[in-house]
Length: 177
Image (cartoon, rainbow, N blue to C red; front, side, top):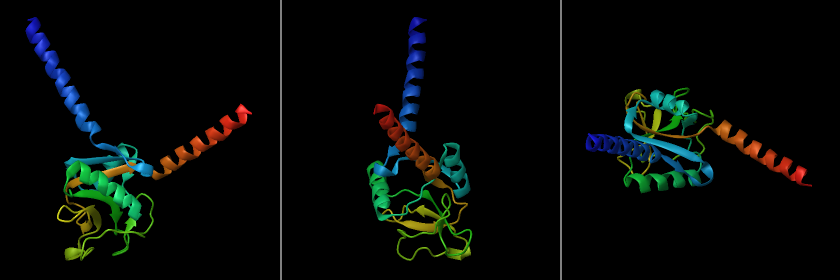
């Protein structure tokens, strides 16, 4: 009886450990760009991926500078080796061929399109993703396609948190005088 109870408890502990390891492996800190969450195992369309990020109080990732692109690519290379299909936060749903970041509304000033992209194949490709057929470059595809995604901290919350930290430092400094 004791042996069976011990075996059952050991199995439960192993499942909890594996589950926690799997979940924590999905989180990364990316230099000055904050925390990101990468879901590669479960597959979602672009809108579902956006909702999954919102559930985590995050947004689909905005990659708006070469520096941020290099940092994200480094994390992805280390984790996956080769490029996976992962949703990014960009689309041209508002105006054809005018790609914007959904969480900020800002137009693309930086992009990492693969050769010949975006091409809006069959007039039905409006959402941006890392394309597994490339060397960590972007492609436009149908928003209904199922794949993984990358979330990042909500820009506005991150900015507010940073402002609060600066104000706290200033107040602490005043009271220290």
